[in-house]
Structures are given as structure tokens and as C-alpha cells.
Image 1 (cartoon, helix red, strand yellow):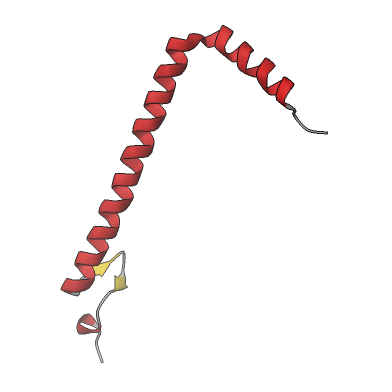
Image 2 (cartoon, rainbow, N blue to C red; image 1 turned 180 degrees about the vertical axis):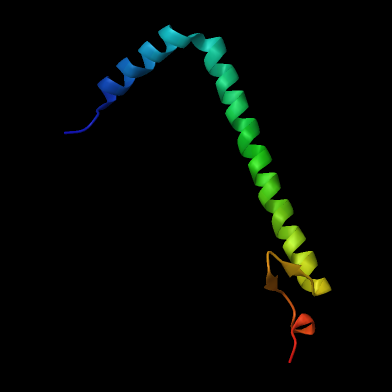
Length: 71
């Protein structure tokens, strides 16, 4: 027993009636912008880590190169 197509359509109609299409469009645009900025932040973090690895720096207490380790 799950949610079928008819139930999903009824829920969709109720949501559109309650919030309106303009409000839903704004929510969608805001959600898309949040996803886009999250992806760019993740990409920037990966680039910073790669740069630190080539420079032999430490990131969050983790040694990225053996140059910095004491023998």
C-alpha cells in the first residue's frame, strides 16, 4: 500500500491552491540558487585542498605532505 498517482495529483492540487504558483516558483528559484551555491562551495573546497597538497600545507590538522612531518 503506497501512494499512487491519483493521491499525488490530489496533493499537488492542494499545494497549488494553498500556496499559489507564484510562491511555488519563488521557492523553486530559491532552492535552485541554494543548490548552485552549495556546489560551488564544494568545488572551491576541493580546489583549496588540491592547492594545499601541492604546497605541502596542513588542512584541518592533517598533514598533506611528508615535508612537514618530524622524523
